[in-house]
Amino acid sequence: MKIEINGLNINYELSGNEDGPVVIMSHSLCTNLDMWYLQMAVLEPGFRVLRYDTRGHGHSDAPDGAYTLDQLADDAMGLLDALGIDRFHWVGISMGGMIGQNVALNHADRLQSLVLCDTAAIMPEDVQPLWEERISAAKNQGMQPMVKEILQRWFTQSFLSKYPPEVRRITDQILETPVTGYIGCSEAIRRLDYLERLSEIPIPTLIIVGEEDPGTPVEASEAIHARIPDSQLNIIPSAAHLCNLEQAESFNKILMDFLQ
Image 1: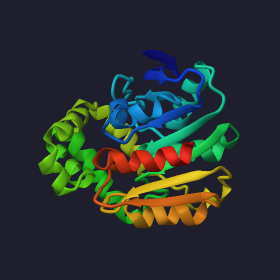
Image 2: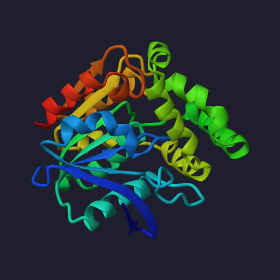
Image 3: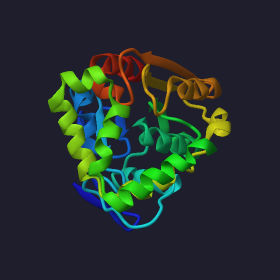
Image 4: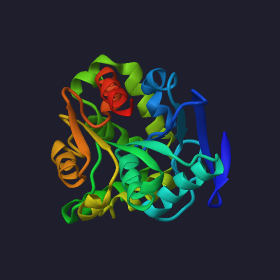
């Protein structure tokens, strides 16, 4: 379904237990709401699950220009307001975890809990040239040439070789990401700088990271854990960046133990 938020059409799906607590799921860069498909069977019986496509992704609008994390968080809050949802659990992976930090810092009174998966709280100066290269590549060549490098960061080699249908599903999402959306969200991500504010987050927080994640490594999650007072850290073995897909059973157990 689509709804107009902040002048944009935002695509979302609301499913599960209508009487249950709300869990909003926020996806990574270059994916869409479908990337949570392996979590739905465990969440829907007890929770009302709200998945949505971040601006620039999936079936949401992808305006030109640089986006900000404030904008991305405002989109999510606008969606929740439009649907009449006051209190919620936030589950975000990678970019979705960055948006979740913004929400927690600015709307903590509405959060029941925060789940941050394979994410970071600051983008160091030495990685700025890398983001410039990625943005330039997308602008000049589109998404196709970036697929192989993205998949190698997101999954272990073992997963890539053993699970081609699952890899194809994510590949399609990367290829379907509008270049304007990729660039807009990349500009938001490269300006991430919440690390020294994380001690302000007063809500229960679960941090999950794949042990072999090269993009937002275990050290990034440890830094978040060290600063959020009421937080717990879980490291999932044999998983890279999208640990919710690569080790779905372990991820789901950790998530459900926390939410329940």
